[in-house]
Amino acid sequence: MTTIQQVFEHNADFFLADESTIFAKDLIQTSATNDYKKNILSGSCSSTKSAFMEEVAAKFTFPSYFGKNWDALLDSLNETLWCLPGCSQYMLVFTEADSLLSQEADIEISNLFEILKASIDALSGSDRNLQLKVVFLLKQVRDSRLEKAMADQGLRYQMLVAA
Image (cartoon, rainbow, N blue to C red; front, side, top):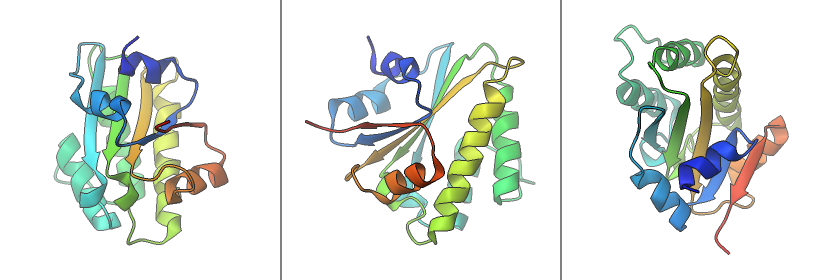
């Protein structure tokens, strides 16, 4: 079973993975296929909300009128992913996720998770049926800021750590 298959076989929507594992390296190096697509975002380039919005807009090639706020992110992300022909699985991977929104208050991490969860729910509906999984690659998985925020929000997540 490939790394990609392992992620999509899990019932979880979110994954926290140790960035030093073979799993993490394999995930980044795996090429997209007709059925599977991914986008890799850098947490180190997204330590503020403003920088995060710039990173997302560039990686997804959102239109110039993208509002760079949480509501606009939800709309643009859903619209972009809705229009992927033939794609049934999509993975959003955050590298260096320890730095993701690290210069912001914890509410911004919660806002991000709320938007991602809303996209997962919207895209997995019967009309589109696109599986969206989100993976955060971290130096420290256990007791990380992201892990605590996911637990606080009651999100379904899986921790993948080195033995």
